[in-house]
Length: 312
Image (cartoon, rainbow, N blue to C red; front, side, top):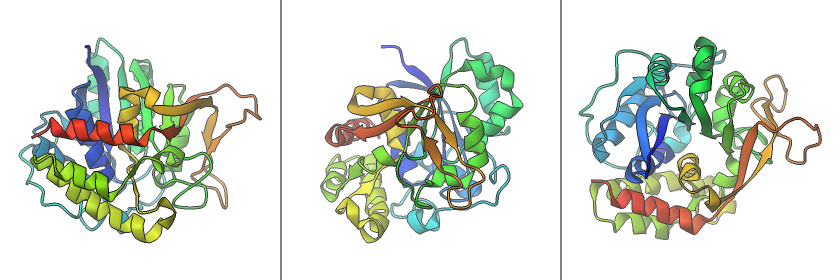
């Protein structure tokens, strides 16, 4: 089976780490590069975390350092969820690979320029790198097959009542991406708060018996602390957000989604960073996004288990 060509843009982050394990362990992707964004932690830390996870799983791909901060705003991080390192919990190896000398935006441009086929971008952090690329290299936009992202929400937020972290962190970048004309799949909080990992799932990962399974379980143990204290409506589950953007590319029939027009609020007093999803088509505007809102949770966990079982 032909592998799907992708570039991953992430801000590890516990759920980004499992997203990388899913992507590489699935054996379904031709992963051209990993780029990093500041988000869950600073750029220095998210880059180092990406290198640690790739070292752990034995992945050999180019890694590019992205933007240090949002386009126009100060950096915000989610250390209250992900800890001081951004990947608190497990013992991870020191990186045995280095990042490339050029920036994430330049790396994406080089890869797309030289590719004979279109490539899917998979951003699971703030969209600063993707927006900067679209601004700097508009002539390469047509080389992007799709953007499958984790971010936003239809009816809920986690930074404000309506704004999700990745979009809230750099709303101007998100606004540019949703206005770009590139086909988008949005895995927002409506689906990721159903993509829950419970303690029984964590123990299932630990029983795999390899280094990656142990690390994944330890990551989820730490990640779950925040959710069990602050998201009691999830009944002990932790929302495993970022792997949804990869899982949708693997098995879209595992999800429910709807084509909608989506824009991002950048000026609102109460709603800055909100993805405004025209779920009921009240504006009559042409849909620009496949908005994902439901998932087969058991199948999702099995997908993760199977992929991590293939890793070292």
